[in-house]
Image (cartoon, rainbow, N blue to C red):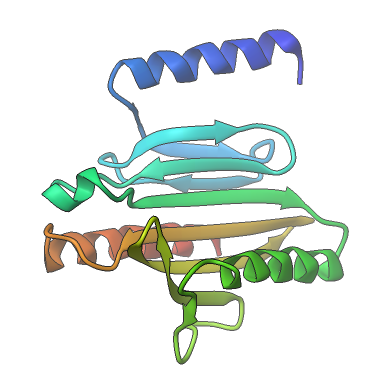
Length: 172
């Protein structure tokens, strides 16, 4: 990537953050080979270019607990040579998850290339859902992280999970 393009992206991202957060919408990654639409209420808080490439969205929790815990969704795309490279990428990500304090896997993951678990960040419990796909020589990871306990209530949790499920359906 050229210096000018990198600088332009950095300035645009910084401007969006200073304006109160970049609103998510249509997202294109990996030179246009990965597409999804995120809910408008999600705030784009980080973007990396290159390999791997990642997009991170904050899912605002309007309750007082939202001030202390960051609910977020991350999509990461990495080039891999083949299915063995994909399996290695997935295994490395799973090993990192298992190293988190308080890691506890769910009894049954939703699919063979998914992980559902709980762990702690700064003494706060979080629910994690990760999905992995191999498409066109790229490993794709969707990681949804929300606080296990929030004062935002069941409707907020359901909307968070629905948003993650919608992204997963688009990335399949």
